Length: 158
Length: 158
Length: 158
Image (cartoon, rainbow over all chains, first blue to last red):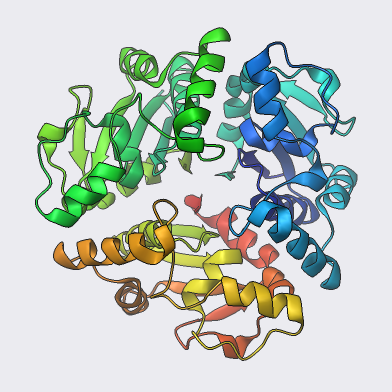
């Protein structure tokens, strides 16, 4: 029997929402489902390197300066407080032995979760492939993702 | 064969999220799917005229003053910075030839995407039909939407 | 014929989003669907008692101090303005005869909606069962929820 498909659109780049996405993705993969995470907009920050090599124009550079990349620099959707919130959250995660996003990326890869970056927002944000960590599996557009989602049983927008 | 159904609840009125919703909706429509967008809460701003004619009481007027309508006045979910963020985003969109929300509304209509306003939040926010642009196809309650969603293959809450 | 299943992950603890979740859940239940609400992260605040009895360490206490529980103390996702926004929203809800979240919890229970708290985030936030109101039906992990979601027709992440 074919594996059930489970898909998540990771639109948000907030630590708490990304954490929820990885908990769902790795849980689904452990349940032997075929899991795809489609990172778009702020969610692309999860898979970005810290040092940005691209950024074609001044506005994109400015946006990228504010919109920092890197899995260990994600803000919180609430109580961000200039980074104090995420710091507290990370200590709480560590104390409760919840893996960090970096660890979750590795676990997800190990479980066969496919991580895909959305090319539709790529050009627009001024990114290119060299800005992303090697764990990125694939680049694809919205049409390719929707094709997958249609075959799936459950799909979330986070 | 009947067309696959694809539905989106557009709860958010943030430019970035609304943009994602329209990218998904128009992509799905181009893939020959039957697409319905159900605008509710802040998402109703996308289809509102700028000048509000209704608003039954002082509180609704106050809320509507802050909660500005009109597809070209949507805030960003992050880095809004009193409107500077959306302005930057719009220039980035234009440079990368990403259509504006107004253009997306037209494209979506042309592709047969149905745009529906949620009557359940309507009365509550103090809106009535005259507050909305003519591209609005229909007004319907949550039950009618859930009936549709049940027949669909994929449905997102954005 | 078996009832259709409808599931919502309530990740958000914002009044407006929680309201949307309850409108969808009670509507689906009135349409004779089998409805499960899975509260996680900030969504757990909806089912929390005001007075917190747990919280194992200082950081969790501090987080819980900011992240107030109780269905009548939820903030808004927009225009929160130190609580003025939610106050306005509540008056608007009352004027339009929209039930409060507390009333929605009761209605949902009456309609057979199952309310489940996510144990995966439980330990991490420093909560235990005694922190929750009696309307809470069950505690379960992400795997148990995904098992349910797979059998359902529609599932949202709110």
